[in-house]
Image 1: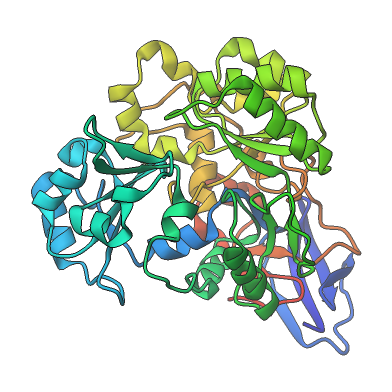
Image 2 (image 1 turned 180 degrees about the vertical axis):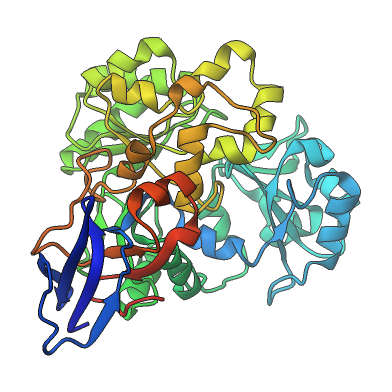
Length: 467
């Protein structure tokens, strides 16, 4: 990218402005800018130019792998026969394995190896629960991975000591038992993200292996992934240098509801991260997990940058505690649009007001960032923005509309820097990186429609423009 001029754009609510980009940075904003020596002139035709969106919590390799996996849950699969048919017709990978995603027990009950064998026993099968917390393996997969002799605490066992086929919160470890395959390519995902207007992402995968870290670094360096990337799963003792567009964020800690840690152990993990001059990014889905984190921070102390991931259930009396500890929250209201009917059926009515809070977090002075949690939640940021402003389920019911954000607030929660989620939104200013999104329409109309169709073009600094 040498020089580009965008003509007749709306910038910061002001129509009729031109913007010149040179060598990946915004050079000038004004009216009737010179186009001499520029490589391209883009006629904005009154469309808004906004900073590129940042998805503050997703899982890059899992999202790329998800595209090649068989759907095992709603909306594609709703009952047992459909699941059996989906597994039977799945092509499998080069090693003959079938990888399923998105399972929930409303389809065929609580799966284990035996019940999965009844659905498909001919090939090794692993199916991920849609929460991302558990894999279920059939007997062929158990045999192939040698889990009978495994000692990992995530391997669930029956009373007789035999593995049930359920593996909890052990993705990195399980990967070492599977046939060796290269991490999935990220070029297609990078193009999809750019098509949504996303120019930066935070990968929230915990405990990244050296191989995964190398693959991510290569994807950024080679341009397969043109976005800026922030990593939460970099080990504390990792010392390698990383590409310019790849940064290290707070240290990811998972408080798993399937096995809550001891308070002293959590305190020590937080202190260790802080000693390495990193904040912590702590996975908290339940109230119990959040209360445990707050208790641990009372002992370990706080560090700027500490953040809560998900905050799916936040009791009203913890809002002041989140503010007191200086925590920021990275949440995913998109789940309301994709799973809201399930929540209405399975979450007690008294708890629904605590689901995916947004407005009351801001009112309590807690910085708030929005994200997808892809592949587990919807990747499209405009869908998440719509969910944050409407809080509607799949069938149009609503969940605690007092938590609705304004469209401007929801967009702002996608515009903060990667290293400051919930902070002030980035602005279009001379000297700033030219990570920009050109919309088809003025901003107010785009937010009213809240659809990815409003994105006309995405510019990524130091990367080719993506149509």
